[in-house]
Image 1 (cartoon, rainbow over the protein chains, first blue to last red):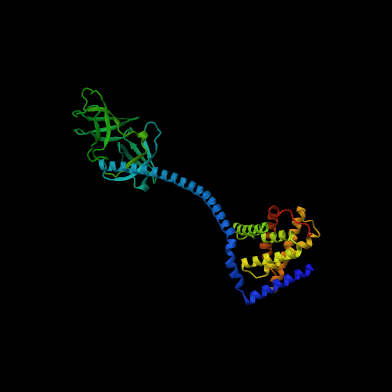
Image 2: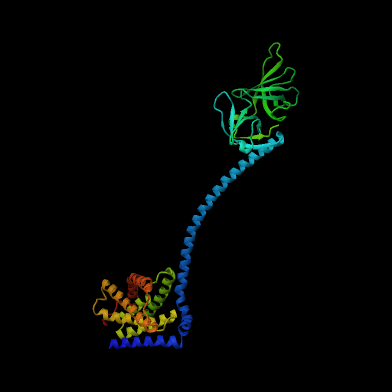
Length: 258
Length: 161
């Protein structure tokens, strides 16, 4: 009996499907649209749950994004620091340009110092490829550094003013009398001036040779000692301390040749 | 009254699961479980009628062929009554076997109607992507659902076994 009832339902289902498909195909859709709100509760709940899950995932993404932003901030801080250093370097160059130079050729990093112990030379990180050449004066905001004596495509050797082979024409700032400052390792200068030159300890010496290697008026050294004049001596000899601390130099300004 | 609550809860939960699961995963068939639970608490004639009615409601809600799910659920209920004479519905393991076989019967009903309407059978992809996951998920959900139904409707009647 149950089997017959079941077969009846089978036939009913087949008839319903055939009839609605052929004669009222829109009927299931219309009913579905009308009763949809009955099933909307679960769907809305699912949507809310999925939205909550998405929010949680987004929060995880936000953490990731936050980490990326923190890394970016760190990079920007580092970049900012580099820019500050660059700005400071340019300011120094500007100061040199305004005070000393006929023309800045380059701002060169000091890679290393000569380690011979006798010579006091610096190795720059720029060379011929950057426009540097032998004979170019090298300065810093503090004062005169030296002159380029050797170049390679990407390196240059600077003979500092305290190098024993260095000769720089100098004069006391604000007073007449031109002399020669010779390097006196490890960090001094021996300056020979005309006997009549008025000079005192603490006086500033600046470049002052006519048609020399260096532009006029660049600070060089400060007098630390006036040596007693030997009988019959034709020159006054003083010792001076360079204004530039060579051991602390990180960058120098290379000027165009005169 | 509790039966209506179970129907309402089942339909809401069905929509909830359908919405929660990814589109590629077929949700568990709570309509089927509801039909079986109601069948287990009714005499076979009422059970078949209830299953047919539930199936019609599902057809209307899904805007499909009218009679498609009706035939499936009715076939499942008919299979349930037949299997319950062979297997003990009270035993948890036997319940799973009964449910699995009734589920197969439901799809047998689907096949009948699909062939009636289209003169063809279901493609292989349907078996792999719909039938298999739906069967697995339905059997996974079944223990919880049956416990819930028992809490709402009380212990199942065995008078119709």
